Image 1 (cartoon, helix red, strand yellow):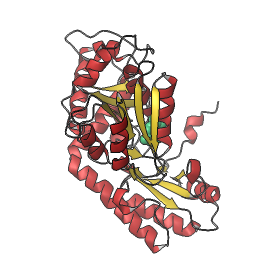
Image 2 (cartoon, protein in one colour; image 1 turned 90 degrees about the vertical axis):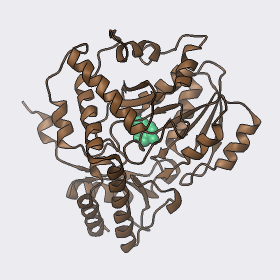
Image 3 (tube, helix red, strand yellow; image 1 turned 120 degrees about the horizontal axis):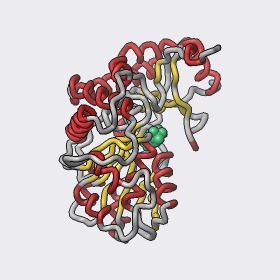
Image 4 (cartoon, helix red, strand yellow; image 1 turned 180 degrees about the horizontal axis):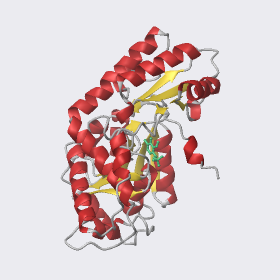
Length: 369
Ligand code: PLP
């Protein structure tokens, strides 16, 4: 009988995620499955909360991984905070800001948006003007917009909101583990991420963190959280306290993987990890420049882990991407929305961000172009 798993090849993942996974993370996931209330597993859970708090630079007690991918993290944040009619402002300059709008709208929020050209950052002055017009319960933005490669000015937006009653909600799916997140100093109340980008773990978990203020807002709801699986008022009883209560069966081995991925970042040293992302990004930009390929995003707000590059004139987008995969075992990403067919997205996330991968891609691109 054929086992299709035997046909899996090793691909260098240089798209917008998932990224290459360190072997020790895969090994961690292959360890014996413990029961979800086993005392040793609870020890792992507690250690993992500490790892996330250290790397996010927060004292938030409610810092846990949600079962599900980054989008589950997004849903968890919005569904726990929004009640029908709540005023929400979403800053949009790409696909993932649009997804936030969709999620918040489905929950019955009264959503206003501020939109910015794809490939450019959110403009803080415009946010300031909007905030002067109306009170918003939540102001939400994507830190690292994976659809374009833009880094949004999260600390500056956080500074605008300081002292106000608005909650600042940030998507850190692509930024966590690749660039610094100073959660408490930046005044972020709610954050969600994913495992498969700069943390270099397979997809399947969404680290989230809620400030005490955000937890109070959840507790002050007049209506029940309208989603059973993501209701943090129940999930917290599994992640906190002397006795733990079952909510849903935790994805045990996936959590081992995240523990190990966070362990690797802490072991290498947070600053070294960010520097490695930046060094490899600069190596890529320099190499691309030599073959005449230009970047979409201005240097001032470029992400190191997601590089959007213009597809050279006359080149067949899909043909090159499929030749890279077939002949060179390298995956890169296509453009999305208005950028489809115009750009490629090259990920240098986590374990992928190494000079040998940059050089391999540059050599492969030269051959293909
Ligand atoms: N937010 C951003 C910025 C992302 O890049 C992604 C995925 O690419 C998501 C949210 C959604 O995460 P997932 O695909 O893991 O559900």
